[in-house]
Length: 408
Image (cartoon, rainbow, N blue to C red; front, side, top):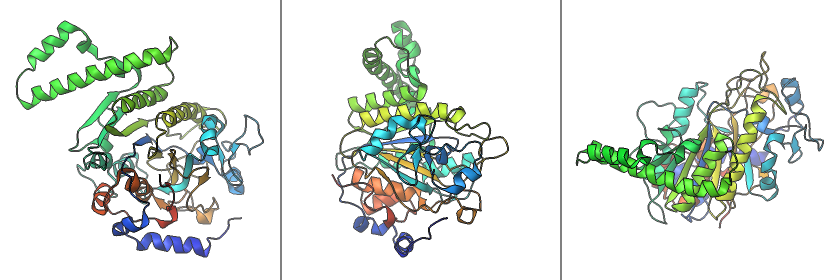
């Protein structure tokens, strides 16, 4: 049986609606401006209910007769208990110490208020932070990269995708290929080929300048990564692609401290059929995800560092006829970092009873993903009210999340 929302919760919800962007200065923690932000985006809509499992909710097993994870019992074939309500998928066991250390927090019912179930539209809205709009809008991480902060100019790095919308815009960003490909400069490694190409593009026109800049960046990146990865691998085979991407991102951002914004993405989360439970399709992906997040947590462990994991929307509370889940609405957002008030979940959770679900089928969005991000960007990058409104337009402050990021 679900517990009704308390008066305190209702007042908090009212505060969310009442406080607009101009309330950021009063509601947010004191500005530091020295943080690093890494966004891990799971394309395809990951099933948040299998990652952060509401194990004690009686409707959970009722809705998921074949894909529900067994209740925590201390074994490797069951969910890992976090508290009286939620548990961790056993494939993510590598992240349990972060929860125990208070460095991992989860907002279980967050996301985009826009009701679309289109991957294309939802990802566009998430990456631009502009809901229900189309057009050639810049990505919110690019807008953040173009602002500068208390520590000087802000620059961004994207690993894996050649042209992610979230990094598109006026600000210059650095892009690195997936996995081991990031260490291979291709024809540029050959001296004769490189000199021939550079001679071909030795003019002062914009195309030639862009080519020379890109060639130089690609070669230097490959050299930097090769040196460190050869020592770290010690002859062993490369880990899963997502883990390698996380290592690449961490290596480059450690070497170049001006890179304060990182973006990493992975696909394969659209589990319409044969999703699995403790084992199976999803569990295999989660093992790679857990290892990647653990790697990032080791690389980004300084005051102000925050790792955000999110997806464009969630999946249905009930499994479908092919033992998978379909496109949903709300989802869990995960935050990792030394300044995160972790070891607990944040915000509202109304359970899985049909009457409490969005359109009687999905986890609702109790917390706008932009309001979650605002809690991080204000102190992490020392943004003014106007800057925060430029990065995250139309965002309202959510007072129910106050304290999510602890002052340094």
